[in-house]
Image 1 (cartoon, rainbow, N blue to C red):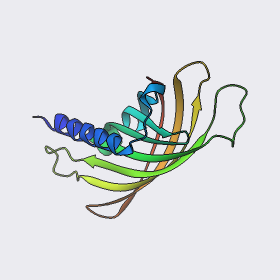
Image 2: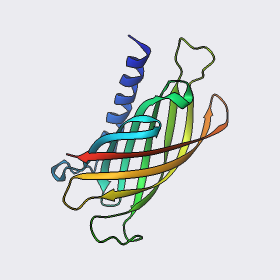
Image 3: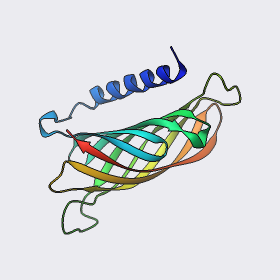
Image 4: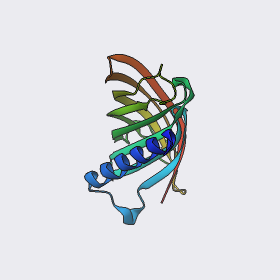
Length: 162
């Protein structure tokens, strides 16, 4: 099995485990969004609303900034809907905490697998008549494995809700 396949399988296991622990996901209201994030990392983005102001989001992809490492991040988010007023749709800001991991390419011994704590903040624009949201976020990371090191992540993307 290739390095990319192992990284993808690991991330999917973490996503499904986290979603099952969250519990309060209302599938009848189609609160699962899947889309794309561009930035650091660039890849697939999934968001699961666990209650009206809370969600779990996952992003997985390949980071060219980190020398083509498989990158994943999982965050618990809290949204505030009444801060910005807009004429249509909703524009909440959100904050949260999570984890970020970079998986080393086994063919490149100069790389390290890293795991860190991530704080995140961002904006969502949720359309009124479309099951779609746009988002912009930034998050500093404190890597704790294999050593303490600071990093920053950011992304812009869109998700479609099922």
